[in-house]
Length: 103
Image 1 (tube, rainbow, N blue to C red):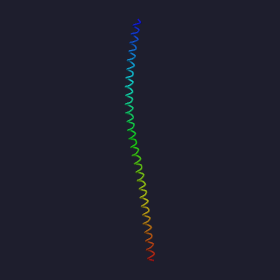
Image 2 (cartoon, helix red, strand yellow):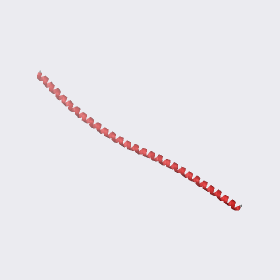
Image 3 (tube, one colour):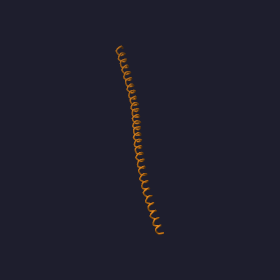
């Protein structure tokens, strides 16, 4: 009976060793999968971040260009107003000068 118990213990130890090796192999496989998935997610996140950065740059560029165009229009309008006032003043000066000469 003691021999049978020893055989049973050895068999149990062998099975435990096999289970341990299987568990270690599964653990290695799971770690490899997790690492691969993590690297994939990191690459996707980097790409998404790069695209978001480009979208933000384009948005800022478009807003800046719109603001510059608005300021350019204001400048051109003010310039036209100044030119018109100068012409009006010149016309008034010429009219005054003609009246002084004629009278």
